[in-house]
Length: 281
Image (cartoon, rainbow, N blue to C red; front, side, top):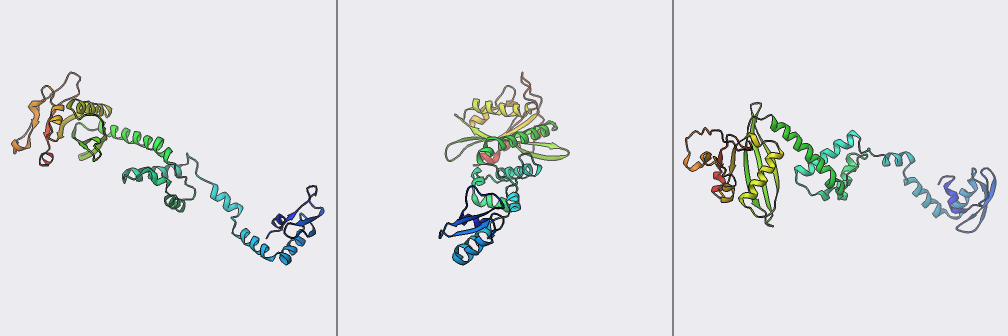
């Protein structure tokens, strides 16, 4: 028990001055003990002799309390703009998105404890901040990087699929395939909710919105889809029928599609290929 903390067990006069002697009244037995703010040995002796259990308990509690340095170290966190804070937050976002984890993971006490062990100065973002800002910013960043990559490709082939979940929610998936620096590349261009009926017009509208957003409408060389009537109709454009490919009747043949350009210039050298994998389902 420190010399100053012992005074917590005594009633001290309001008008005493530092250095002057005063009489403090023990809160536990009412005994008056003489001493001063700087010299508290009489108060400590009284607690040891008359209230030993309280003295020991108080001393043990004081021993386990963190020091000022420990408190400062614990409370000191990275600022939002600190490079280390940004680096770890970026890794957290990629971890959640890459493994399709629920956003509620940042609210888990065990996860917070893990991050505390990893770096005591890191501040785990809240679920609201993660969903309303951080994920959106990362999505924009990744899309911009993908757009810049697609700009370097001479042409792009697409695979398009449309399906419904068990809850009957529609989804549209579009992947892109191209050659860059003599290497084959495949990227996920979009996987988005498809609301409303799965009509050919709706499919075509969503498709055009995506290729326009990624600035690849004039680079599409071929489209691979299933054999569903709505999918076939969606891409039955003027001059396009001549370039449809059915694997069942094209074994060993070579295709050299001519240029097929619409008035808006969004299609060139188009070829539609039906996916056998889908047709066999």
